[in-house]
Length: 349
Image 1 (cartoon, rainbow, N blue to C red):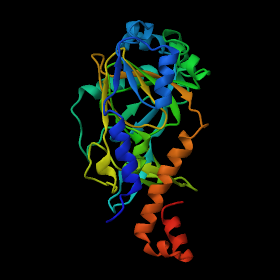
Image 2 (spheres, rainbow, N blue to C red; image 1 turned 135 degrees about the vertical axis):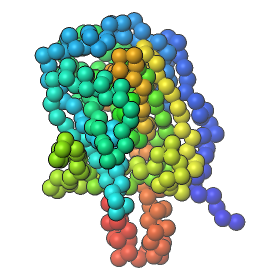
Image 3 (tube, rainbow, N blue to C red; image 1 turned 45 degrees about the vertical axis):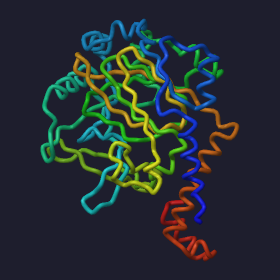
């Protein structure tokens, strides 16, 4: 009798003990209630939790353009709306590609996003570049500071529970053509949808073996002839670990554990709040509202690296990689030091 794979047992046990659904609240939690979710590392949605915010009551294309009319903002540009995503070259090589960054007047930017949203989706080779405000660098207190007074300066129940203020508060604006690939962040994230809809596909950290992380060369889009974009690698570019499996295309690039994944789906309507716990994988899509774009705000709080949570996540990742090395390089199981070095190098360890 073959012993059951302990990684498989771990993932299966987790799903047996945790529901494959997201709790829905109809009022904001207390700090104590929020901390219980943080301790369990489980997400929840507060339906209509931000309806009373000035941003949710006032923001539309006209208001934003009037407030931001004299401001230049940083814009992420990609050919397919695939910012920070995995791209497969013609030769089959997978690359991690970051967007081209450029500065534009905000009014020009929002008009482009609205016009782009009203046109039918293009197909290669007739690519129409996609633009997205997604700098993730505390931009709502920097380049979008004129709008900051329209949202709370912090989320009180998160600030009290975590005993810290938000490390970053970010503004997001784009249309339905922008999709954020599966990834995870080491932040406790409170995400608020202001305009349009946002659809999240979520995977818990325990599913690290399911997402098939691979070390991919970090590249970025750069301007090319005719207004198009090309992929280029900067000097000294390194490989970074990136999930290459998409839970919405489960048959492609799967690991031996992908079949164990139990994704959670949640759609945020205008005024909804999502607590996305630290280290949860998420893929994000959006639907433009009546204004022709989708807009959101999020608050990032540094996660705690104390206790066993961070160390346990690293262990699960490393255990899955170690098993893969043994499968790919059987001599490892017999202690072949020379072959071990090859295995580790191949996986970017």
